[in-house]
Image (cartoon, rainbow, N blue to C red; front, side, top):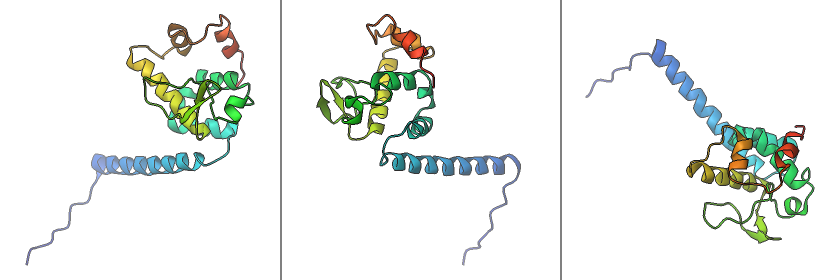
Length: 159
């Protein structure tokens, strides 16, 4: 019969590292649970901010302003009926969460899918070498808007 030996107790750095890893995994699980829960909920600005904070906090500044501008404070038909939060066209050359087109734009099953698609769109441009450190410059570099006052309109939105 083999001997059963008790493993030595972890102490110091090894114990701290294991505890931090365990806490990280718990938070990751809780965040994923909350993301899935939000994906079943009706839109509100507070839920949008919470969702952004969970999936990509870098969207909290300029992209959030874009969402507000593109949807007219979330009142446009494109957003309210077709869940398109950013005025996205249907993409044919990158990954997408869009389910089809409506009114010449992409349509989505849920508003969170539109946020996810915006991330795919942004990452597509980043993969082509564009930098998003200064998001206003990024939008200008990719010729996002033909309106010369687009940046000012975004900057003037109080969030």
